[in-house]
Amino acid sequence: MATDSGDERWRVGHDFADRITVADGTVYAIETTYAGPPTLVALALETGRERWTAPLADDGGFWPTPPAVGGGTVYQGGTELVALSAADGERQWTRDLEADIAGSPTIVDGAVYAPVGDGTVAAFDRDGTLRWREPIEHGGQGSGSDPVSSPAVAGGSLYVTNGWQLTALDAETGSERWTTPTEEPDPPVVADGTVYVSGLDTVSAYDGADGSHLWRHRSSATSGTGIGIAPVVGGTVFFASAGLHALRETDTTT
Figure 1 (cartoon, helix red, strand yellow):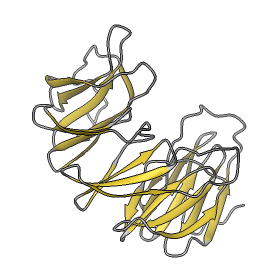
Figure 2: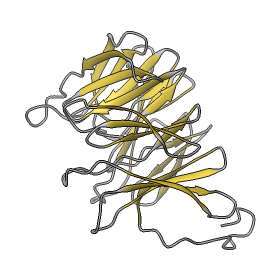
Figure 3: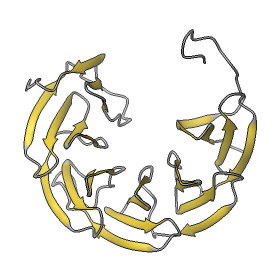
Figure 4: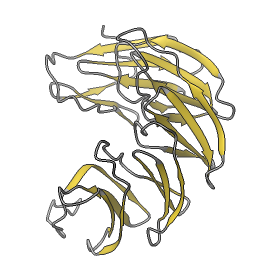
């Protein structure tokens, strides 16, 4: 739709699942059907014209992650981590981590960071060379390993949630910098040295340097969709829970 009027510009008949990714004038989305494996579809942003499609590996038991795009490559998670050419969808490399990719990969400074369903985070070079793979401390609720959220990366640190725990790793080496309990399990967002994490009815802010808790805002929500929605940060923290909340940095509601 046009941003200035809301008028529809184009429409396509694909059955897309999960959120879409937009980069460099192209829309990337996952199409799911009962007749075949999930398919990654690339559409021209201005016209909706299909540029290419690429079927994804399907073992019948995984849900593909939203694609991540950077440096002319599309990175796709599922039963494996796949890198495809953003120009034509040609597969460049595939890495089997012996566990499903738990969330969308994150691309920063020539590295690809993938959250893995066995409770680890894996870092790769753009050519698929493994830099490191490290386990994330379990948060203490439930049993076994909890899937790791999609990472947020800034200032040389990588931040993830895992089983009601927020953890910071050194982005270059994977070594743990700090970890702290949290009430919020959704993927973190980092801005200006602060890490924001949300859940069903709360959003919290943490100091990115040492993990100290800065503030928590609580909504009146009593039920949710089960889909983790990260807060949106840009001078104001926007938090969707029993309505849309716009929070200032001075908010300290508990």
